[in-house]
Image 1 (cartoon, helix red, strand yellow):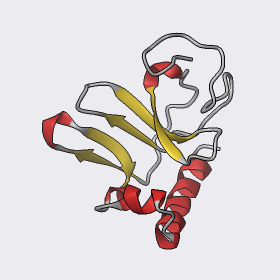
Image 2 (tube, helix red, strand yellow):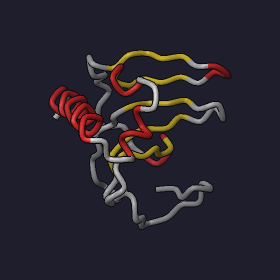
Image 3 (cartoon, one colour):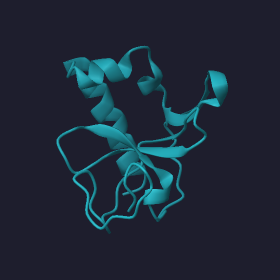
Amino acid sequence: MLDAVGKPQSKSDWLTVGKVYHVLGVIQDTDRKWKFLLIGDGPNGAALFWLEEFEIVSSKIPESWIIAWGKDGFFELTPEAWRQPRFWERYYDKDPETIRVFEQEKKKIVEADP
């Protein structure tokens, strides 16, 4: 596991070494780094983590994912419902409808590759 600056570490408040996590989305940000969207171990909800922090145990791509291209080379594989304007702001504001949509899409991803 790597910390935010790429230094190896054996413990994290966000993740557990050896635990399997479902990838909820894949992003290549404008910094050209690949990141996974997933739910970590803490109460913080969905967050982005560097690809290098993980060993890939499944290559299955959920049917609910779409490809999204943004300006400056931003690339994303994610459920279309999560690409709606201000979705993540509403998610972190704990909007009940947005949380319901998030959980519905997350369930599809988990069920596609239990």
